[in-house]
Image (tube, one colour):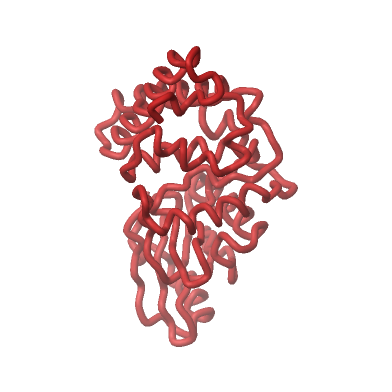
Length: 275
């Protein structure tokens, strides 16, 4: 749960001030909850995005994100510094100027996403402890196992369009898996951005990891994901949970209908004759 900047001990804010040339302004992040503190801090020397945590779960999550962000270049913001003080873990990273992408059908931002994904699909997971598909998603299939590092939460809020291309933030759920898992998890966000399930799958067909995946494996993933979020939606009043339940159900329904037609289109399961 997010806390106000004033929650930080004076010793912590003093050390942050040393690193930015004195604190001029603090602007809390509008979303996210992995760290208790997440704010853009403007100093006389530079602007930095600061995350801080003191609770066991928050610290563990932030340590994991620090490891992921430090291990990968090109996509996450650069880690500038980190320290521990007064029971707080504090991380300062490059502040990224830009807007969140438009992932609706036909948007030019989809090309930026494709470019970033093609690079990320070829990024092996560095040595270390990472989430597995099972403990990240709550379900598993042998085909989900692999050696690539996937972000696993590429919703538009975690993507920033910059002058250096699309950058990816919030790596707290970085997972070692087969690369197609990243693409399967993206379907729900493409649907949420206005794609039909068929359009989402057509767009994903540009990636070899997608086309090489057994349709039955994708069917299993879609069904399990829809079941998970449907269950969560019955236990939650949060709008985003119900959105994910609707979007994953739409995909699972599409795949079940497409498989019913496979006698007529055996090589295009997931697209169907009208897809």
